[in-house]
Length: 427
Ligand SMILES: *Cc1c(COP(=O)(O)O)cnc(C)c1O
Figure (cartoon, rainbow, N blue to C red):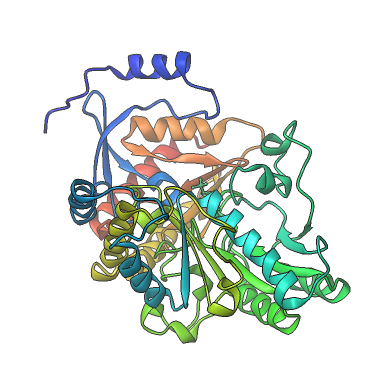
């Protein structure tokens, strides 16, 4: 297929630089087409995508079934607002709630909006069901969390870059160490005003920090014990990325088949989804919970003009069906094990990479250099030149998260590109 884009990469970058706010620092590559695990730049050069738009494109770029569902629905009806009913929202809500094992779904658009929604639901539940005094509810969060960019969410971030000069901050959050059950237990025991515990099953933005195998389950039982809502932010880890439908499955015996055995894993009280819920085709996010929690929200108390629009419903339903039909959780589990095995062999004999970690196809390689050096960035530039796109996360860490539709042959090709590139930086 010929490139239809008239702009050169250089021109496209110059336009963004001049007319766009500088709120990102992109790797200098201008993409104009994508298909499956591949993307092409404005000059037609082909790359493996190893970021997947921060795990939004789990189903691969421009998945034909998802694109078809989107365009067919777009021709029929795009937006009604929730002032009226539409005929795709109900079927989508039925499908998604059965898929994840909850009574109800509240539809939003972006991840941050879904996190905000979960916080509002948890607070309202705390006042109306748990009996906490008005304005006293606290939500426990973890250090080095990433939950989005709104004023409230950055209030409980400890990333100075995300926070500084955006105050005053929203009150009502207690920060504890991640993967520390004792800290959680002490906090829950010593404070009667806790509404919920908001946590990422793996801290993606922080550098793919994978907690102990039993962290999620034990955290859940501590929350149950203290009548505190266990709120899982699976925006990045969910929808097959980590080799199971949800990362709260951890390494339980269901072997990535949790979608068929929803009762066997650590089910959160509130589940937050986004990103791959649409396969990257459209902004779709959602909060799922059972009736005793979700029913605290009454008409007029929360909403969004675009939330639950017909295109979103059609796209998200198809995107979830693709995950199931193409066994993406199983594929992510298999390829992830292979990736870490191959990379571990390299790390063992390398002085540029110190460790590989992750679960399923959400992985990171830690680079042997000081936190403030640009080595990880320089490696990503060299990877780009070698036909593979990845991005550094906090510190000198590179995240490797390709679309889950990759084949074993493609993965092995990518491993050799990554190792070849890292070897150029060997000290
Ligand atoms: C990306 C992300 C968000 C925010 O999603 P947006 O769609 O960018 O608002 C929240 N939580 C986690 C864990 C994420 O990875």
